[in-house]
Length: 212
Image 1 (spheres, rainbow, N blue to C red):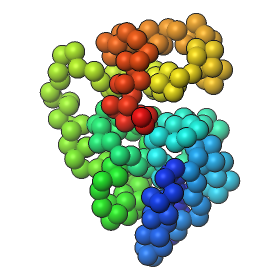
Image 2 (image 1 turned 180 degrees about the vertical axis):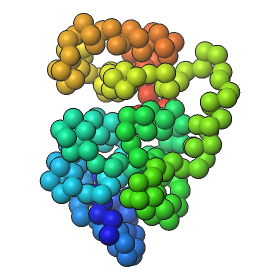
Image 3 (image 1 turned 135 degrees about the vertical axis):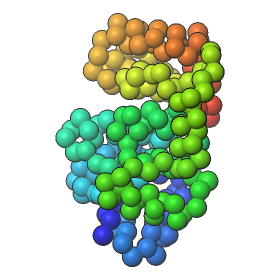
């Protein structure tokens, strides 16, 4: 039996997933939530085989939730479920430790396939996104804005900047100094070729990191 937790902030989607998985004999939904912090708490307490995690949650984003679990010593296999078929985002999440990446426009059966593969020790990426990742290894566009060159810490800082947090708030959340936050922000802007906060926010929306 594959024990899973669903973290998805849209009630209709979350309810639909739970109803669907109830029809799959080898998958059990042991909990569900619409909040990232609650997902972290539930994963620590219930120790699921897989946590299905939305990237954009109301309180903390999916990458932060994954990092909190890893830092607390409660590593859980995480399958990201997102509406954006972004190969750079998928690559960043997999590099940070995720075991799967699925686009919401796919069929429910794909989730079952992914869960079974992850449970058996493998990884799963939506085929169309996986193909784009492979293609990007051989074809690069000079000057193209991309997430793939950002480090995991830079990604965390970028997400918090896009959420409107100040340098002091970001420093407090990540347990680093304000000076270090400024250094990360400069690196991010240089790598992405963006100069203003509003440009960073627009970039994050375009990349599917935050919703409008």
